[in-house]
Each structure stands twice: as C-alpha cells, then as structure tokens.
Length: 378
Image 1: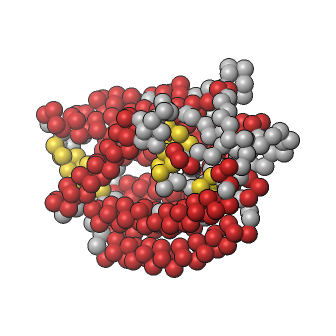
Image 2 (image 1 turned 180 degrees about the vertical axis):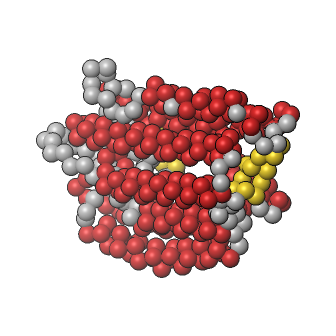
Image 3 (image 1 turned 90 degrees about the horizontal axis):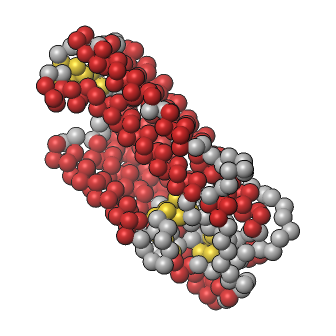
C-alpha cells in the first residue's frame, strides 16, 4: 500500500474514531449516556457530569497515545494488512473506555433507582417508520438511487465500443503518483471480467447503498426519551440527513470509479490520473468531514434538534436489550436493523438470525482479507 495514501487514510480514520469516542454522548441516541438509558431530568445531574469529566480525562490519557502509535506503525510499515489491523485495533480500543463507564453508570442508575421512574410504556407510531404518501418526503427515494445505474451501464457500453482500441495489456492499479503498477490482459474471459469489473462494482455499490437507504428510512425507530411529537420531528430530519449522506457519497464513488474506467479506455496520462485521484480523495474526505460535523450537530436520531413541545415525555427502560450498552439483542423483536444507541446510523438485531449473520460476516471477511494480504505481503 502506498505510504501517502495509507498515512492519509489512517490519520483521517483515526480522527473520526478518536473524536467520536471522546464525545460519545453527543453522538449517542436520545436519553443515552455511555450506553445507559437515563431519564431526561437526570441526564445533566452532578453525578453524571463528574463521570463524563473522568471519562474524557481517562480517554485522552489512554486512547491518544495508542492512536499516535498505530499511525506511526502504519507510516513505517505501509502494508495493506498493517493498515487493516491498525484500523481494527483502533476501533476496538476507542470502545473500551465506553464499556468501562457503561458499567459505572449502570451501577449509578441502579443505586439511584432511575430504572423505576416513568411509566415504562411502549409506544408504536408507524407513521415514523413508514410515512404516508401525503406526508413530506423524509429522504431520497430508492428510485433515485436506481437512476444512477445509468452511469455504469454507459461505462459498459463505452468499454464495449472502444474495446479494440484498448491495449492488450491495460492497467488495473495505480500508485500514489498515478503510475500504473499493475496490469491485466484483455484477451479471454478473464480479461473481459477485468475490463468490466469497475462498472459491475458500481452496480453492486448502488444496490448496496439503496438497500441501506431503505433501512435508514423504514427501519425501526427508537421512540423514547422525549415527547412523541418531538421525536417524530427529530427522526424526520435525521432520516433526511442519512439519506442525503448516502446519496452524496454514492455519487462521488460512482464518479471516481467512472473516471478510473475512462483512464483505462482512453489511456490517460499518469499526470491526469494522479490529478484525478488527488481531487477525488479530497472531495470524498471533505464530504465525510462535513457530514460528520453535521451528524454531531444533529445527533443520533436528531436528538440535538430542539423542538419545544408540551406533550408528556416518554420513558421506557430498555437497557436489558442492549449488551454492554451497544449491541442490540432481542429475540422478541422481528426487526433486523434498529437505530444505533451509541454512534450515528443503524445497528443490527443480534437476536435475529439474519442480524447475527450480517454482524459476523464482515468480521470474517476482514480477518480473511488480512490473512490474504499478509500471505501475499501486500
């Protein structure tokens, strides 16, 4: 893996993970502190404020040195398997302080008997999960995601038209300087697959993002810690945020893949490829940074959006369904995806066999990928 690319990506991911862990309660769902459900009137009590101060101090002292060390390792050993291991380790490390303080706050909640407060009711409002046709649009519809498929189809057509003009040995990988360092032959079935790989990947990415968007709009909503009218407005804005985030990232990825495909078809110069790579990387990183800042401002589920409502607050103690305050496990819930309790986005229900499969499969693939790259020395 190129040193510049690996270092930039590692630094970027480190900053995102580090600050999301440092301000974990800002990125958590409504009424959640360190993964524990707390009645709204006690969220800013003195005991919790003291725990948050201790947490930030412990987090900085433990995670910051680890983050610097992992970035240094990636810098001196610019291998793809080292980058993946370092990223995986950092993802685990930033969650350890959260788990420690989840236990501390769970004990405090038990001591203060906060779990026995409130009516402990279950509220269901299907209009939040599946808005009616006459309601305002709460995100980008899946048909608009499907429209993007036109781009990879055009790429496939152009590749077929210019097939004869493509060199017998065409580039399939470029280093950070834009110089081709990997080639494939266009003859035979394997050559055709290599030529069509990027457009096919674009189609898979579009279908994948479309599926995520569907869950983001229609997934199970956490109706808790707030008034019903307030929660409905917050979730509506949050769904729009998620949908536009997915759509913007997808468009940028499709454009990047298309430009790489054009470089193969039209044999662009290394300087052109280098310029395109740099500009594309900057745009994608900038988009992720902007979306992350907006996510911080909005909060998980839109909790940071203040809407003055005088309805009665809903409080339901559901800690028993969350392992370590972060992993949802409920066999009685048929939902596959649920709102994240800690962080921005969606989690899977580990009590559902499909959810468990979705959770385990990426871990297996990551471990297999690390082993493969290690054996290949990549």
